[in-house]
Amino acid sequence: ETGVTQSPTHLIKTRGQQVTLRCSSQSGHNTVSWYQQALGQGPQFIFQYYREEENGRGNFPPRFSGLQFPNYSSELNVNALELDDSALYLCASSQQTSSYNEQFFGPGTRLTVL
Amino acid sequence: AQSVSQHNHHVILSEAASLELGCNYSYGGTVNLFWYVQYPGQHLQLLLKYFSGDPLVKGIKGFEAEFIKSKFSFNLRKPSVQWSDTAEYFCAVIPTLSGTYKYIFGTGTRLKVLA
Image 1 (cartoon, rainbow over the protein chains, first blue to last red):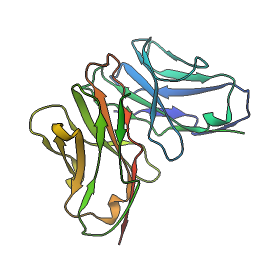
Image 2 (cartoon, rainbow over the protein chains, first blue to last red; image 1 turned 180 degrees about the vertical axis):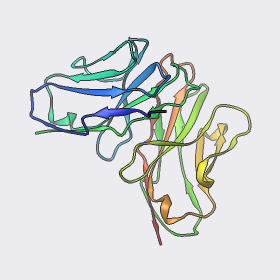
Image 3 (cartoon, rainbow over the protein chains, first blue to last red; image 1 turned 90 degrees about the vertical axis):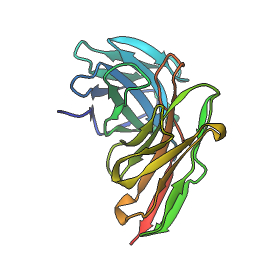
């Protein structure tokens, strides 16, 4: 069984640029959630995708957008990057969108915005 | 707003000492509760979870947690820590009626165990 994978591992961008982060969910999982973890903070929920549809969004501006593909992998896109977007971005997958389903986390993508 | 508080940001213990990490949440309804651990250089891993039933739950590696509904708390405990328990620990809740099954995480507690 393959776990959750994310790419790239690290990324450096400059203000105003756009970035795409990728996530492959664990086998058998159809739900992907994205979290932002700033330094010294706990992960903050960005949004969740269930069967290719957005299923809830946290307090993030519209320049944070996402996609889920038929194979349940997912992308997080961030436009017009700001310095405060520097963080670890975590992807988590689960079998269903339910509070009873454990979410399995990937290793994260470390984004640095200069 | 729903939130999770972890009062101890940094904890340093010697091996064999007992551990208790506090976690309180603010939400009036039913929640599911989790503790995750992040070892250095590794991804978040589930330690234990509580959905219902016995409020004392046991997890992996000798950890346990107690849900006290009246105190909105879900404290993590381990009777005797080991050097390998050095990690960051996150408490998380999911309000069961939120409609979006997102984790609300605390800010984490960094535990250092001295050999």
